[in-house]
Figure 1 (cartoon, one colour):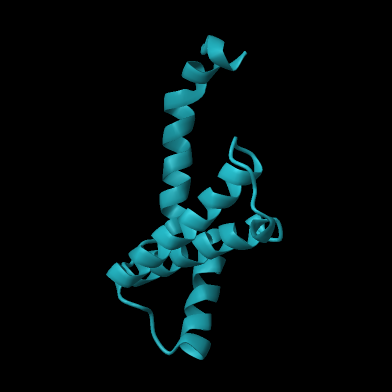
Figure 2 (cartoon, rainbow, N blue to C red):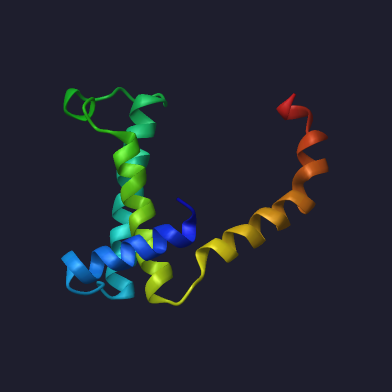
Length: 108
């Protein structure tokens, strides 16, 4: 599924199951909450903090999908073609960062 199809799938889901989009500010707060859940898993599972027993069953993929869902909601409700924006960003990063990363001694 490409990003454009994912945006359509989210929009269809909202219309069928969600009644309407939460407003942009609510979705921004929701996104912050979801990113925090991702950060908690990564900090405890891959970082230096110990993982609590209650966190060991948390699914990182599910939490990342929550982040993606809210990002797609925000794109839809603000009229952003996220596929085009992503393609443009990838092109920009490719042109800007190719030599920079290859010449970074820290990455070798």
